[in-house]
Length: 169
Length: 169
DNA sequence: CATATATGTCAACATCACTGTCGTATCTTC
DNA sequence: GAAGATACGACAGTGATGTTGACATATATG
Image (cartoon, rainbow over all chains, first blue to last red; front, side):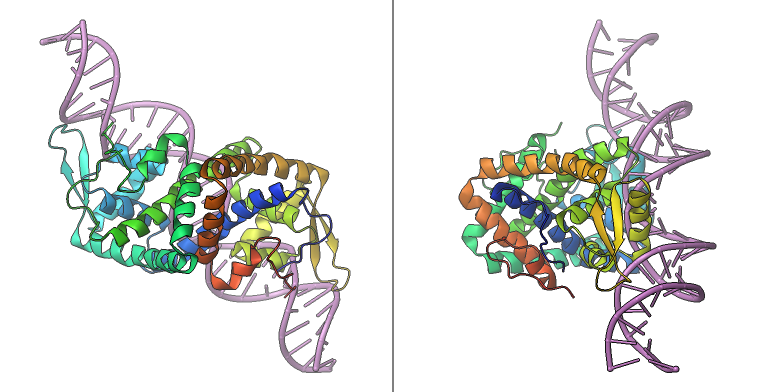
């Protein structure tokens, strides 16, 4: 680890605070994804598969368009990843009951099992961090993170208590 | 945005809390990188270049090994990105004054300018989030984030006040 | 002198993303 | 019922970022 040498950018404490935030986010995300990535590599999948499996498990019956809005990737990128997951039996599709153009997505047992194993690693990390930081800290964490998210998606991830039931688009 | 349908995984509030953390991190990181990514794309660079320029600006005189330890990517991946930045005049190298095998890295004026523009977007986002969340929340945010980071790197990113001066490896 | 370290480089490859275009089924509206 | 919008899938091509493994060179250290 390098020293903070003379010449480095810390003109104001303010700037230092902001850079601290930036770096915390970088390091936390780096380490947060490390373990699941290693597990995924062993079965020939990648981080993108985890994201899809996660959100399909989170919102059973979610359709492709909703998934695209969450992931903010292109249809083609999702199509490849989703196709692999369906082909390998992690995700099942069924026609939308109201709008038959839609494909409603669900985890199979195999998929639910994978999701559980992958996410468990991240849940453990959060549980440890919450425990170490204390209950008050958790609230502050949530508030800052909420406000880092683009406003239009802020309601998407909210405490279950305070969340207004989101509507389908 | 999909509804929380029956069948979704929320056996305990505990699990819901952990999933909230996971999702906050996903959405925040997604939005945090969005704007710089678009700026970088216009000049033919990518997110990896931003990371390198950021940490070279942060630790002027950093060498390759230290950068590798921060980024946790392979030498070859860094080499390509770093090579491009040097070739295009964003980063200057000079021989290590003590150990002449080392290449000490520094931003050129052009590089410092790029770093400023890229990071400014993220600084603004953090400033807004800190302001909206309040001072107490910021402290909790820092504490949780610190504890999400692998223990061996926790000291690397610490409040300037509380940080023990890190040693070179 | 022998060995370890810091760095660079080459070749080959995988993953994840992008753009642009087109096709088909289905819903909605007039 | 025709016209247009929407949901989804698919093809072709491209690029950024990452990987492994092997090897080379300069320098430091015992």
